Image 1 (cartoon, rainbow, N blue to C red):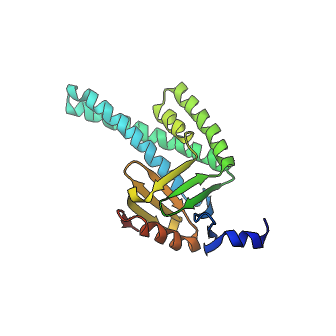
Image 2 (cartoon, helix red, strand yellow):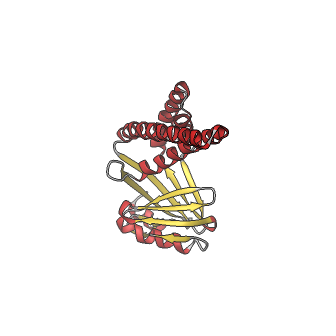
Image 3 (cartoon, rainbow, N blue to C red):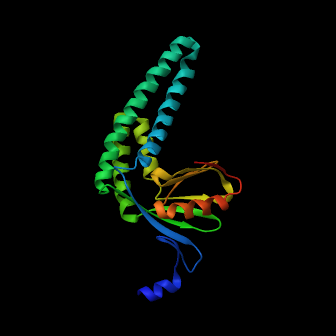
Length: 214
């Protein structure tokens, strides 16, 4: 398709952001995984939540033997879990970033109903292979945190947020990311500096039930 044909199908509404003939708004984004820590902290929060959840489970199991003993066990499991998860994530993140060439590439589609976050197919195939390896290693080591997180990582290549169900929007301009929170889903929408205002405004105006935080 030549330039003149493309211009009849796509209308640029912001730098690098296009409204296509099907009325969907599309753009792509490449993020430096070394300079932008958004993905690292997102995964870290998940791993810490899993580790603390397991520690809390052990706390209640041990509570019958006294609060002090149960509390000590909770701190021990939580400490080891958070420390181990952080160490594993650091190694895994550096490996993934290296495999990706230091760039996280993603495509977005957005219309009146919602926004779709879709990882580039080539990167997703690499992520699935790495995640499968992590799940096997986690099972062999008896590490449910690593095993579970790896299984989740290999499960999907896209994330969709329905605007009517969005409860909270967090805009982090310095990291070029808009966090969209629904009751059961979490999504991250990336947009470059010149794209950010348009994308944020569109999302905010189409999420009537959402609280905004910047």
